Length: 402
Image (tube, rainbow, N blue to C red; front, side, top):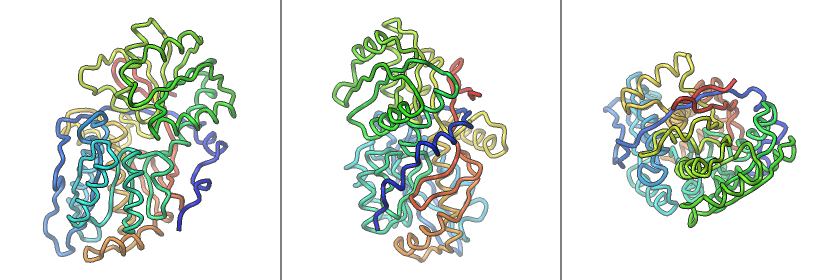
């Protein structure tokens, strides 16, 4: 049975309530170990057998930071779980495949993982590939949990859930935050009309802006074919008198936009969503250009709770950098799968379809204390319930905005 898309979108009123409690922090991530691996986290032989989790995300290409971060965060979770005795006595083995942020390659990766013996899928990481893989997983009745693919279409089917916020939630919550905190009176928007992630957030932001009274004075779009020159977009935003530019895009494009703003002497603030996380680790990027950049995220790397402190320490030891939201999403995804598998009584000898039938109903019953939410729950739509935060880049680091 397909889900009703209207039921899957949180109302603007609900999002507004979420946004009232915003505050947050984030981090950075690395790509040095972002190579595709046939078995990125191996399980030792145990009496309970082996539970095989497949992962798909970009570890090469323009948004490799996102996929590499998810991979590293998930590996830490797998290591912890196996050290503690596994899932229902099963040792966890993860196989993480590179899709280069490409839908066709993501489908090929999915088939590779099926041949390997995947029993549940953690992926894909980004929206366009997830939209491509989701129908395959639905047809197979494969349980799918995406760490951070936020497009509405990613989890239409009953077998699919996500860790991150959806595009509608991010856009509307951003508009509410801008109003509630008096961030700016006049706002310009620059978005990628060829990308489902960017255009989806823009549409919900525009709707939220109309609802909450955000004055959008200029809207400029670009496409995948025109993302090398943002001079016109910045010129238009500057001429409009906008004090804030909303950029619901990935970090790779944001680096060029920020550089162009400095070149044109445009002294505006910039605000985006989770796609901007990782910008501090783009090779060759002058991070001073991102000073004052704000982004919506559910993860605070400088939080002082035991779970976050432990994760940051382990991630730093493993990768050598402060973890970003993607890393936290990957870590939480593995623990969410663990909680659902344990609640459902999954065993290693079950096929993926049987496992899916058992895990789907318990997803609306479990509560998971994770890095991206202290008490995460899920709707039947596959959407998570948790509060967003906003961080600002100050002196080359993410700082929680109060």
